[in-house]
Every structure is written in structure tokens, then in C-alpha cells.
Amino acid sequence: MSGDGNTEWRLEGDELGHCNCDWGCPCQFDALPTHGRCEALIGYEVREGHFGDTDMADVRWAWLVSWPGAIHDGNGSRQLIVDDRATPEQRDAMVALCGGKHGGPYFEIFATVCPDDREAISAPSAMETDREARTGSLRIEGIAESRAEPIRNPVTGDEHRVRIDLPDGFEYKLAEIGNTAFARATADDPLSLDLENTYAQLNEFKWSNV
Image 1 (tube, rainbow, N blue to C red):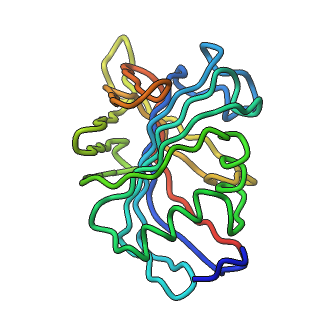
Image 2 (tube, rainbow, N blue to C red; image 1 turned 120 degrees about the vertical axis):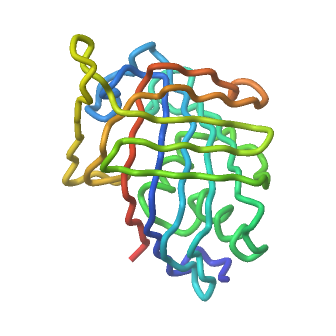
């Protein structure tokens, strides 16, 4: 693992995100957040990838994030939580990546807009996602728990399918949009949250610094 900022890396996997915005999330359209501020719980699971010589397959991590206004205005706070099954090398890799020290737009942008970066912690976690069904769940022992479900038609109760297509997106290219049945997290302010019937997204990510 290099400390010069040039370690080559690639990650591919699944993401489950919950935030306090209404369905659709104005942030995805370069608009202001629904309630003027943003808070979110996001889980990630790597299917395949590497950081230098470190195999990153099956690494799971999550972020608790909060901003007092719009994300692009900065001044955000974040907490990185790495699954306790990760090896020390994998954990160090995630800390370095999330710090924006090794390139990649997603990590660099969030490092810039979240100057309040809490010390990373480890905890047992479980995550399940089914993008086609728009269902998912995340559980981080003693810290957070969430469940996503399909949006339903208010008249018929039928499932309502919505996608957001971002051909030039730095986080994802295509996301299935769901409903946050609930998302709860206990953390030091401003990172605790309690969400219900808000925006949820399920997407694949493919990130690298090459």
C-alpha cells in the first residue's frame, strides 16, 4: 500500500442509500434538498476489486453523513463504519479511499464537502439488496438499521417503478428508486437519524482511479 496518493484501485459492487429527501431526491437533479439540509445512511458491498495488492472482494462499509444545507455547500460531517470481518489491510484501504487520498471522483468529492470526518470504527454488519425488486436492508450492530421497499401507487397499492438515469454520474449510471420504510442510526450529533417514507436508492457502483 503506497502512501504517495498513487495507489491504483478499482471497486465494483452494490449500494443501498437512504436520505431525508422526498422520493426522487432533488440533489440528483442539481436542486436544493427537500428540507434544506441533508442527512443519509448509505451501505456499500464490494463484489470485486482491489486496492494495490489488497483484494477488496466482499468488503462492506457504510457512511453516516449530514450537511447543514445543500451538499455542494459543504460543512458536512461523516462517519465511516467498516464491517468487522475486514482484514486490517482492507480496513486501512477503506480509510485511505474514503479520505480521498487516492483519487476517484466519488471519494474526492465527499472528502471535500465533509471536513468533519470522524475516526473510522468497525462493527458487525449485514446488507442485502435486490435492485430488480427495489428491496434492501442494512444492519450495523449497535449503530444503524434500515429497510427499503418499492414505492406503491397510493390508489391501487401496486408497485411503482422509477429509475434515475445519469449517463455521466460519478456515483452511479442507473439507480432504482424505492421507499425508505425506515432508517435509524444512533451516533453523535449531527449524525443520528430517524427516517420513514423518504428517498431510497439501490444501484451498482463501478469506481476506480484509472
